[in-house]
Length: 257
Image (tube, rainbow, N blue to C red; front, side, top):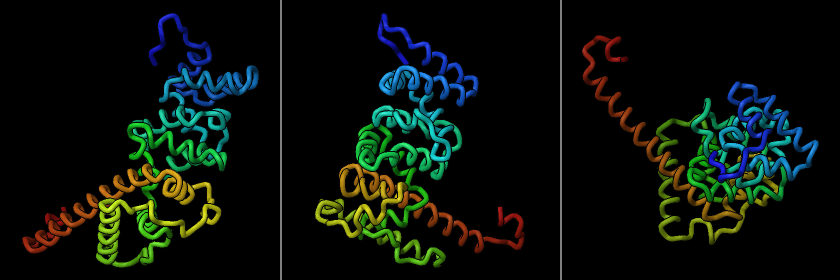
């Protein structure tokens, strides 16, 4: 992080960064927590502003919903957004882990969810990060975007072709809604927030759709593009598989490669 001339880095920031670099995330969190204990919450919030986003991310990754941290409790929406969009660059990115980390912060306070989601959606890479957050629930989110309900009305164990057709229909519905500008604005909630207040992806989707419409549309465009690409790859694989079986010369081992 570049500091203005004459502005020296707080010793705890320096110490935390060194500990994180050495792999001692717990030690870094302890050093930061000590500031809150000794000088109050506001002092720690100021220090988090000086901490490099990647260092703040390292602490948040270590202390997700399973281990509470004063850092996760005090990080501001802007500080959180700057850090969370970097998550793709570090460590093993899984939707489940990203969700746990985000939920621990954004759903900590029922009334603050809007602010955190707004900060994420306002930053470069924010829509992609939110799309990654929903990665395990594409079908439900597509259904929610088009009908206001999370029930996909399709058997999860149904034939891949049936699922593909269903997904293509959803993509068409989303494209139509976006093209005519009535994607979200004209619809009233089918479900109330209290019905989906799970402190997880459903509530996140609800707040985005009904309180941050533009942000939700951006996320849906990203998810729609990913689904389209997924369908195209599946089609290519299917064509390749079909031509492979036609070209097979009896050498099963070779055709399986």
